[in-house]
Amino acid sequence: MGEAFGVKAPEKKLDVDIATRIRVKEDGPKRSLLSIETADRPGLLVEIIKIIADINIDVESAEIDTEGLVAKDKFHVSYRGAALNSSLSQVLVNCLRYYLRRPETDIDSY
Image 1: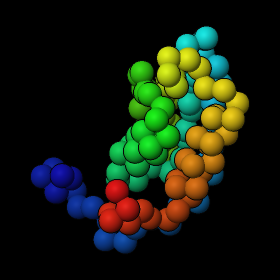
Image 2: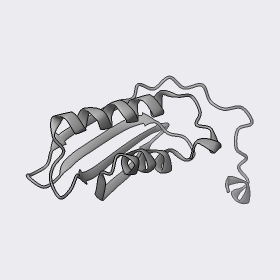
Image 3: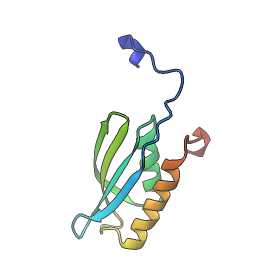
């Protein structure tokens, strides 16, 4: 897409070491706030949503932001109309941390 504006994408992938931060906190009785900060990359949002959906967690709304090379995303999430309990929050954080720390996601894994 950048080529249309005279900007070419880098041929080599950037080797950026950005810490991944994932937090879940209550945002009222019916939803929780999931905050994710991680290195931005193509397909990141799809990857996050797929992980959330695989655990049957509903995304009610999202705030998606990128600052430089860092994606800073917030999701209002719920499970069966209620905020996530501590066990489900931990499962979600562990799944996200596992997948987001991998250097690349295989297309076949979708």
